[in-house]
Image (cartoon, rainbow, N blue to C red; front, side, top):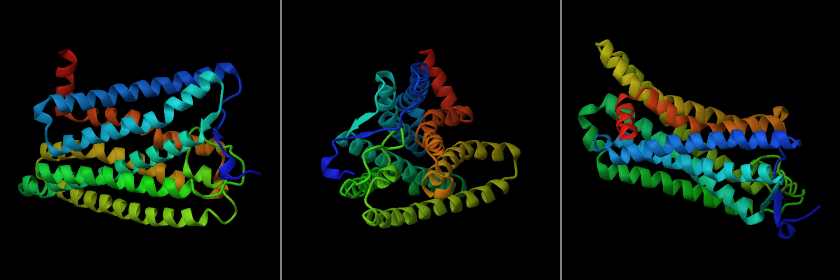
Length: 305
């Protein structure tokens, strides 16, 4: 038994015990991390460099790539370092920092994905009002709001979580610091305060989810009314990448935090957390570049130069 005042570090989930498997984990995470850095870095530099891509949709995509880079850089490097050094330690301050940044970046990304669905709705359902509804100042305000909401949620949850007394040791069954795993270390009733904050946050996130669904219902109704097949194909090409990213992010994150405790296990928690915190930042650039002809052409120009 211990309390939070005596905890100076946490122990993360140990990866397979043999040295060969630890090195394999290091190489696998390194490959994913480098792919995420390359893909998101190319998107950021391409959008910043090509003035033809200075539109609201690509401005939001640039910010999404920045958030993805931050999210994957918060979790993977520490896990790789632990595997390479055959250790499990993370300092108390390092754990709090991880919790803050992963909450900040993922929350901001979710708000940004909601904003991007609104962008697609206006572009397809109200194209004549696009410049008015999504001018440069409006786009800046929407992105600033996404980042600000992310900071607010991260501050509230991080401060509340690390103010709880921890009475169940310091071992986290995870490869990075995550609130549900820290709550398992808290005293029997002390976690209820954080639980109420999680419920309020979940309600707010559910409202964002409803807005995304409503936007895409209206989008698909409008697309199906387009008479030409080429017009429908062009409209779907701009919407499907965003819908795929939203589906991957929301489904894995919701399952990670809302799955029944009866099916919870260390292995399942690890797989789900990798799916929502590691896979999307690495896969998003590929999803967005496969069907987007403008972005593919700009990427090709940049790579050629």
